[in-house]
Length: 313
Image (cartoon, rainbow, N blue to C red; front, side, top):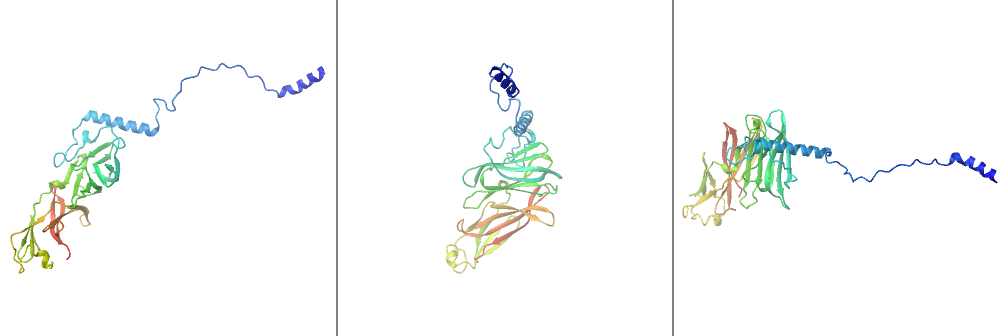
């Protein structure tokens, strides 16, 4: 029996596992975060670097340094020579409304132009601003009227320089049909407001005349609107049956209502088409529009032509 057991043991011995050597286990270490304090993901590193660059530029140049300028004081708010404080759009609780690309600084150099604002449930947007990034510089353009409905930007050449300017438009949403319109220029990295709707220089007027007519006196010329096809009951508060005025009566030419960029294929440049409402007895009594085609020349916009457009009967 003993011999049998020794023989069986000798047969099984090669198949038995070898005993593991004893190992002293270290004391449990404190938990280590997945990313150490000196390690960051690539996006985090990029964002941190951008914030540091912004902070350094902001501290070095200060608020209100060169780069802040406009055709009228306060039109632009370009902080620190084209930089702004270290704050991202997410931190400002903003929405990226629109993004476009153009040669806004110099020809051949493409810049990113972004429109930001704070949005709610509807189309009304507040704190509207434009951010331009080019060649490591960041420009922030803040219009004086920075809230409205459906703000939009459009890039195109309006001046002789050939670079792209930035047109900003939004509507007031009121019954008068008014909007807020600006044209910004950043050629050479020097921000200037080339057009501001609040600086509209024209003071036009209109009045009723004998013979069922309305005379529109623009600064450049005058126009007559014929009202003779209108129903007599509409004209009864103003005219005698023979067409003479009951009493002198003014019509109204509104402030600037709409401004649209329009392209001139002959010059290869954009122009501004400006509309003002001509109204009679009340705001909804629309008689027509005073329309000016504005061209940029010799440092400012001036009308190339002016006309009156009338509504159908």
